Amino acid sequence: MPRVNGLHHITAISGPPQENADFYAGLLGMRLVKKSVNQDDPTTYHLFYADAEGHPGADLTFFPWAHMAPPRMGHGLAVEVSLEIPTGSIEYWQARLDTSGAPVGAVEQRFGDRVLPVMDPHGMKVALVEPAAPRSRLFTPWEGSQVPADRQVRGLHSARLWEREASLTTAFLTEALGFAHLGTEDGWMRYGFTDVAGGVDIRETPDERRGAWGVGCVHHLAWRVDDDTHELAMRAQVEAAGARPTPVIDRFWFKSVYFKEPGGVLFELATDGPGFAVDEAPEHLGETLVLPPWLERQRAVIESGLPPLRLG
Ligand code: ZN
Image 1 (tube, rainbow, N blue to C red):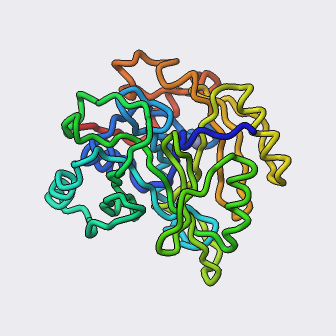
Image 2: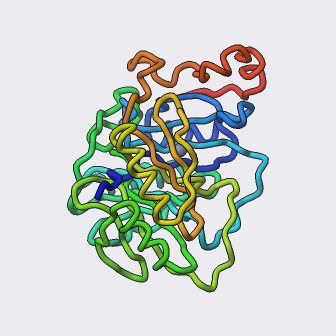
């Protein structure tokens, strides 16, 4: 049975773009690998942070919809994003985040990993995870980062989901997407893969209300597929499991299919290629506003409507 290959990217909703860039590119030292616009709402940036090359699995992206209200936390939402940091780097990160004044929590143990929780400037929970047994992943350090190469964020580790009826979601993860149950601890069920990075932790929250999107919450989770053939096979499997996938949508840097899992969290399938270097030289990723070809004619209008964004 075909399966997905862990996380491809996570997209979240942020407040003002400059504060978002100051936190993820500045404090966390990730590379802004693509500066574009929301393809369905070109008055809003779409900002992509990742490792130096923007590998699948490294990419955290944001729609800065600053006018939105805060989220209504509840079931059917991803409530935290975890980023992987190198073994032995948690003290470095604790000191760096403390010095910056970011609201950082105490170090926790989760599934044998050391975890440092912090909140981003718009209220999104982020956890830096030092895995006891790191999974294989592609990573290229970013030499333009304020963070030394051996301390840099390696990529996406996981996300935490609240679900009203967890069994519906866990059955879908295993049967439609090929996840494995990796363990249960403190009420969190971990699903992922033993060979590739990027999974989910699920908590059943039957007493919570239905969650709703807002500034400071996750918009969707995207899962890696190799290519078009793999994507269509996974799409068929998702449809057979009762979900309603969209047709394949060309997002230019990858091809996407969207659907809601049974608990209501928005998922995406995204191809590994062609990647972020398809329309910019690898050494200049993220430096200029990149538009899909059908929006190029409106570039002047789009650029004049976007706030300036400074890096570094
Ligand atoms: Zn996406």
